Length: 230
Image (cartoon, rainbow, N blue to C red):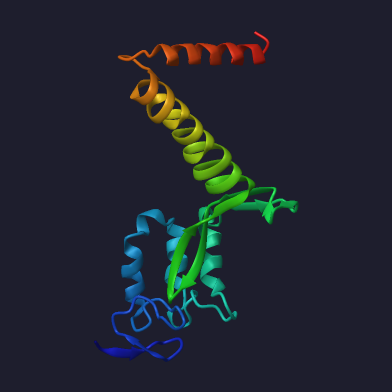
């Protein structure tokens, strides 16, 4: 494998390297045309004015590695400025409990340099109350997450869950649901189940009506109505 000097740090790298493993410089042995090839697959997503700005970047002093020590922040600033969805949103309450923020909201992505390559990683909300695309908390609202006490979202695992895929332990309500008590279009691993179809010890479904399940859910409905004063 041919070795050449990186134009930034002058250390030897593979002639076919996409980024320098030492300083992170993209296409360290290539020319400006290589950047065009790299961006060609993304051009339809890049607004014309940003595309023009990319062409004006001085390739000999590429914007990816900054002069700052530690993080190479210039590339981050560029991406965050023109593609704000990468930055997302993050907020933590100052109040903490058991080392976790009382409320943590995290949406979007983080950009970091690992082993000479830029990588995108999703922000993960972690708190007593956690809200985000990906979240872990006692109470969780997320697209995908774990709620120790309660979870609401798309794919959630927890003690009590309301989600499209509700992986509950005590209670699950969703299109697909599990739990001691599970209600959904399809239920699985349930003791009491109410669904169109599924598998439970006592199931009330289209083609199966266990008397224990019917009595349990009637009683559950009465208790809910009584709670709301009806």
